[in-house]
Image (tube, rainbow, N blue to C red; front, side, top):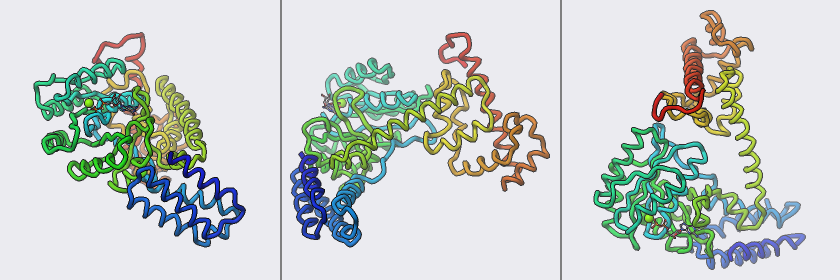
Length: 439
Ligand code: GDP
Ligand code: MG
């Protein structure tokens, strides 16, 4: 496979004490062949090899202490760039539900991936609603319903007699009314790109205005996957791609070409038939994996995620027991960038879904700096007991933080609202079961 071949090329370089220009060129010829054989788009290969050679042949590398390693580093960086550089995350709508429309050819894995996504979101304490919009393929609705049952995720369906457009619209409506965070619409595919299918997808897009249009493509189809992505993108304007069946005997070309050819980022990869076989796509890790540089990054990230998870639980506990102070709030703000908005943390609380107004607590990232300054201008006592902050203190805090009294007022009000909500939640979760749907 691609990985083995590239690793062999890199290994050969590693064995050399010094790397000459001709060594680099020789290596790049082999890289080029390996990529072409892996079914990477021809133009992409050309640009890639040119980019790497330019950087690697330059003095930057040849004067280095360990030239071979530097070449590998360049290849790794360029591979990462090729696949989009940064990880491209799932969009989150300002106002829930975030609407995700799944599109793609028949058999690509739309329905399976819809289920996988539902599971992925549920794991993050989000509530997804699945919508059965494939009314053409026999048993497609049943397939989604079975997935939903296994995942304990509700599936919206109107049977196979209604139009997919209507199903999508009503599904979204239901998600709004029942306060779902996400609504995932499974649609019908055809064996080939087809005008009728596109027309229908366009209508759905127009009516529901999705936040994400995810194209599901089968990685095993190599160049075809890229062509399919190009067509769908031209017609619909995709927001991302899910590459399925990467677990199979794929040559890997699609993963390397999709972004470069379509400009659409790969957001997830499917690695098996089961619902847990979905992973966010990380260009840097994929590059490292292809080059066989170990999966150190993945490991570090996993450890980090666990540490963050612990922190989040700690906060949730403080909220629950109403011992949450401005100091905690401040610490939370500093975590925001790393672990997502306050809302995420609140949603970990039992019963949080039922509290109205929770969504209004979203913290605007641009305001974070100001909020931080305000809290920093409070005395320790004020942070613990905000109720002592009278008009004089407000003025002092505003002056100290370079903000306006209104800003201080607003923050105090927000904090107060939050505490009230926590109280509600605690009341709700006390003494066992809540009434369904009740406040
Ligand atoms: P749809 O027609 O696009 O909805 O495709 P389905 O979701 O029904 O999937 C078609 C087939 O591909 C099913 O047998 C799935 O189990 C299988 N499949 C989907 N994703 C993956 C994947 O990531 N890996 C593997 N090995 N099989 C997959
Ligand atoms: Mg399907």
